[in-house]
Image 1: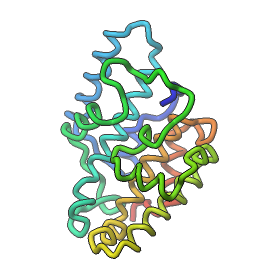
Image 2 (image 1 turned 90 degrees about the horizontal axis):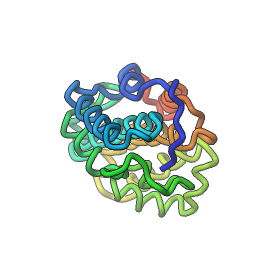
Image 3 (image 1 turned 180 degrees about the horizontal axis):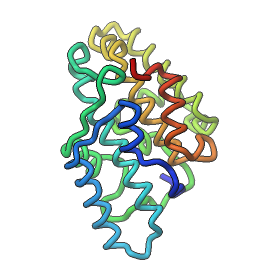
Length: 213
C-alpha cells in the first residue's frame, strides 16, 4: 500500500457514522487506537501520516468484516441503508490481525502499486476480481472502475444459480463492500480517486444507491 495521506481528511469513523453505513463500538475504536499508539511508540521516527493512514484503513477493514452476517444470513441481517453495520471490538481485532497491514511495521516497503489485497479483506473477492478485472491496473482509471466491478460481481452472483448468492446481492452487501473499497482507494490512490473521505463516501452512496431511506 502507499503512504500517501492527507491529514485534513475527515475521519472514517465519523463519515461512516454520518452516512448511516457503520457504527463503531467505543471498544472497537479503542482497540485500533491502542494498536496504532503502540506502533507510534515503537517507531517514533515515522511521520504521523503513516499511522493515520493505517488507522483509517484498519477501521474500513473492520467494517467489511462486520458484513459477515449479511453474507451468511442475507435475508435476516439488517444492513445499510436500512441499518448501519455494528462494528465491534472483535471486528477491529480481525482487521488488525488479518488485513493487509504488517504487525511489526506501520507500512509496507513496497509503495509503488496498490494491489487487490490492499483493498479487500476476503480472499474470495480478490480471486473473483481477478476473473472480472484481469487488468487490475485499470483501477487507476478512477471510481467508475470500482462501481463497474461491483456490478460485475453482482452479476456473477446472480448467474451462479445459488439462492444464497442471489440473496446476498439482493441484500446490498456487495454494494456496501464496494463503498468501503472506494473509500480505501481514496486513501491509497488520491491522484485517481480524490483525497477526501467525505467526497468518496458521498459519491459511493449515490452511485451504489446506499443513501438512507
